[in-house]
Length: 389
Image: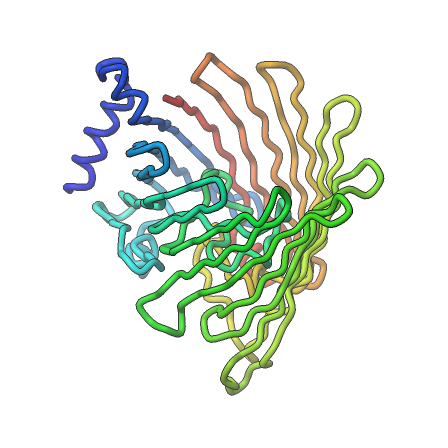
């Protein structure tokens, strides 16, 4: 319960920042939000309704210790009610899992249909000069380039289906960046784990070549060799991005192929009337790499590994977003997984009720894919009320 008490104190500080002295406000910055997400879940036949609700509180703290050193602490508290939680084995353990070197995830309520969960997903010290950046602690090491699937993101992949987690997960890591010039840099990141086989360590070289941002990566990913790269530039008037990583077992594993490739490429384009569209193709060579394996994922919003980044071998994603007015925006994302005959569609509509208050409607419809997680997921409909501080 101590994490709840601490979070409540920080929440009050966030809500009333004017109480601090002016010079303290310059050094200590507090931001956060509170969300309420009531929802309705239906099965694959759009029947058997189950109601759920989520109260989500997030707090982001930044303390500028000196001009070159800062400390960041960020985390979230969630109180969840779901009729489908009742009687699910291992649910508490699933929420309580923390893949980092330090366990900073707590389930403080597990009672039938109720789950209360708190976690710290950012806790790092940062030092910077003109040519160097060093971060130590739980942070987001984002090496991905694409807007949907990121096979270059060795340290902390995210789930495209988890629309509520906009900050995305972090990793316990040491990250050192050295800028060789205005257009080039080299970066080393190490994320140790409780088991050496789960450690991730890699180096990335980035350079701009003929108006294209190019990156090359090489490293150790959970007892596998990882070699890859990516690019970001323009093709005509459209943005053109892609990334690929080849993974190879350092020790041969019985019943599995030793190496596999994961690659994704896409186009993005801003239409004259303000619609931003994305088209992306994914090849997931890690799908069913282990012979006879079943998908162990209990929740579709849980991040998958970069060497097996999707629930299928192929995926095609098309999305479009548009701001209709300063107060109204909307969009839709559509994904097809042809090899398992599954599809996903997510329309959303957002309306600003005030300076810090927004309302959003989101639907997630999973279809097809007999005996797959898409079939089990059914359909979900949410209302989202968010107050930012």
